[in-house]
Length: 194
Image (cartoon, rainbow, N blue to C red):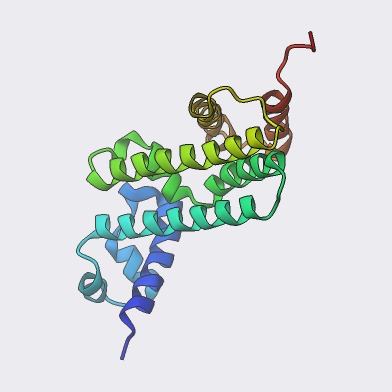
């Protein structure tokens, strides 16, 4: 007897790799079935459509990202360490979790209702995490933050602005230098002490 949850995980894993390689549009149910060495009808027993599988893949990757971010933030005590870890893991995870990344940022996928739900949830969760880090840093007298809401939005906007040049060009081998430069500006600004 096949365990339903185990089978779904296998489909999500294989389909995730195929979607990542070919993109949503070019991926077919035949390719997913072939990768699993099963018939398409077996997949349709557990998933209604290719869109249904893609949605499951995106939610799976969203959970991976959430877990990685939570773990990395909890791994350090200092607010600066938390912010650094958050930025590095967030930016590097998008490279690995390309289906989730594409779901959030690819305008060609806008016609799926679940995409907007994911985008909104992602933005809310990210702002909440950033606000917590900023609040912790201000409380510990490490960050000079007047309004954590606006500061969190500014950091989120900066990170989103980095995504395109960092990952769509794929030319830069070491993104750490660029991320460290951004963190230096974030933490220390560009204005000399007055």
